Length: 311
Image 1 (cartoon, rainbow, N blue to C red):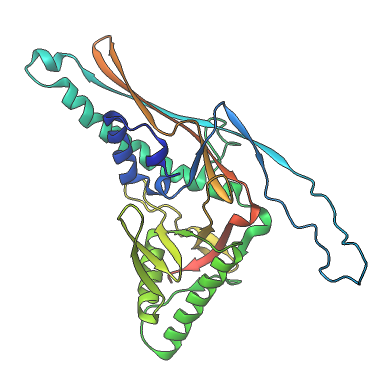
Image 2: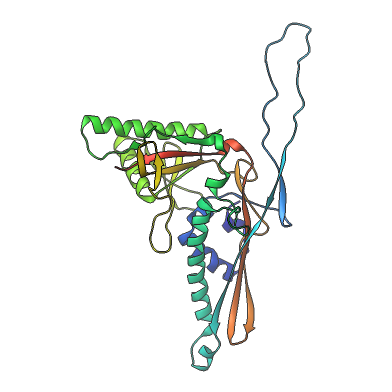
């Protein structure tokens, strides 16, 4: 389920959801599932035990029972309070209206932080935060698009069109390495602009409406998303990675397959829940909470490709 579907439907929670959607759009790509308690013990996707599909007449099939693997995943608590001074009422202003406005603004600021943690979260550095995509990607799924990075050139000369075609082909190969096919790809905002421009020129670009009526852009059958921004306007997934001789010039792309308790998924209790907490001291208070963790149920559902360059 999407975060909007799994969260509370009250007006206050809707204000928070709208604020988060503005600055943390990746939250609304994720497929969530609800599970009570502080954690979930998730059964990892199995692998086939079949070693052959041919047999002789009057011969039994030979099979091996699966050996299930379970992994615990702890939810992390995202929480903040919004406050306004009760003195607003004494000054003939509307403190409830001001509280609603401030709640939306605080949700937008929290969204910037959440968007970054979706990619860069590390519980090993801060036990209170969840692990992001970079942290949960299996080591075997770290790929390099080219030994010294792959430049995506501008222009219409034969050599540049050839390089552009090569870049699109490498991107489509990346999508295919996600078992079942990637549903989404996340990349630096400027890299997204360049790749979509190339895809339009070469005929790989698609524009559709999702089930909520929002416009989505695709290359092939995969939804292309920018990584978003920090609150100061700095794009996430920056071009600061070194691949071969390309020192601090490269960025990466995450190709993922979202699913509800399968593939790459998100664990929560009830999604976002906002509560009016009444008056505390001189303030009216709204309290907002979301607990969640990213769960890689199937190791093949995320691949990180490094070495993408714009120059």
